[in-house]
Image 1: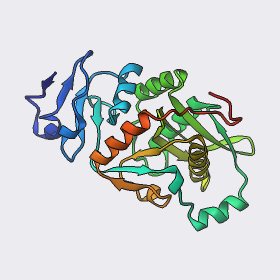
Image 2: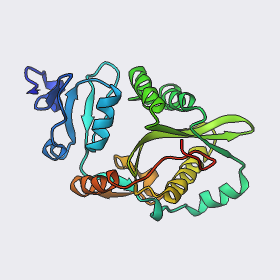
Image 3: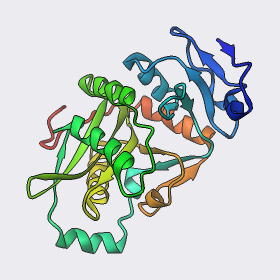
Image 4: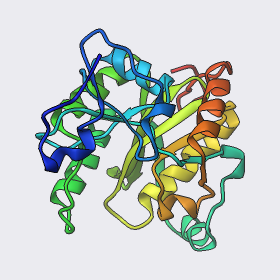
Length: 245
């Protein structure tokens, strides 16, 4: 592994980052500083992605940029047993009819997450590049990436997806086409993860939206220690009927 050099001022964040070759391993995330940029480059092969999640590292970059690998400090996590359902959402859940499925249509969920960010009213762009879509669909086929679908009157109106490593669910993105759809899906997911013995939901970066559900910030050191325990905890993702996926 080598360090970047010759970068211009606009790429100052990358200047001292580790560049990954095809066979290189990730450096210790603790050495990345508070910004959390661990390395750049490499690829999005399933083997590398799984290795990254086991190290507490995830990819996050935009179209036209090199692949960037992050392990932020602090880290936001949600422990399933500490799930908080806001009162307003609890009332709405009693009035609105949604149906929830798991892994029924992973491809539709990840593409909707991408589309909503690219073409929604805010037009905020997305890190879910087509390369990322392909990579996570491969992970799904290997039963490491999973989706939650939220349906209303037979139409997919919300959902989320993430990666399961041991007893940790790493949330990647969610979308809603109607009010509260993704919130409903998140609550149903976390309750199911709690029943299945999962230790934590990795929310990755600070979010006021997720904080209302009980997610909290912890130090990277604390997160990596908890992740190590989660990796050693026997746990499996199951489908909506309770059978092994």
